[in-house]
Image (cartoon, rainbow, N blue to C red):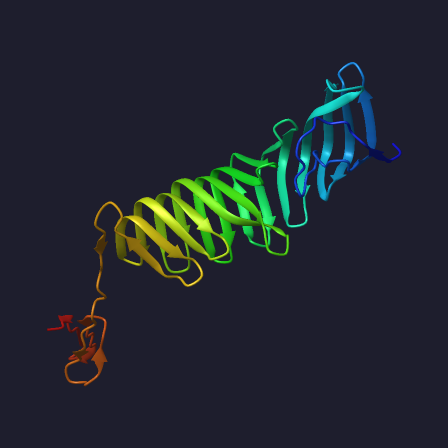
Length: 296
């Protein structure tokens, strides 16, 4: 097949355009390229096969196969596309994020893209977001949702929950970034020094502070602190419990002090808590063995 390079201006349902929009790109044309392009007139669908790519308003959608479904335009002549399916090696690429999945469905009316499959992830300069069940991108709301063992990882810090909601926002320079992450269900924060569990939380990506609520447990080594509310600073490594609705509780395990023992007759110290002396000598052809003695 000869590769196609087609620039299409699609007539879509009117909706407010966002700063970076794949489908609702205002008057921007949709540039579609693929190895093979087939228009199914009876089914009102356009199928792009082989390295299919759609670029519009600074956002690119890639897949092995892209299928766009159309319907009559109630506001005028021609058709409008209401759904785009992506199958195989799906990627959504914008200036600041790359989203990966196996299969995806974009509902144009809802401005919602849902990805499923293996190795679901969102890569950005603010960390890596992964999910087991599903990734969602809500274009108008500027939100990512990760469902099922959802995790955001940044350096050696990890926040995991059943559901993770990442909120995008503009920086003073106009750059779109993940600014806040809300988490629900079996929340787990792990760092190099401690593990924190809770029912829900809010992570401020800019400050690195996570506010947690519900059955909070902070574990560092054998020390455990319990409470209803907590604040964890992922940048400084400082965690603190907040009284909230009830008192905070703690279980602190002191370090065991090592006692010094002298091996009788030698003057050498032992710090392992016991003085095991094994003296093997020969007396009249027979060996003699000394038994272990405890420190006192």
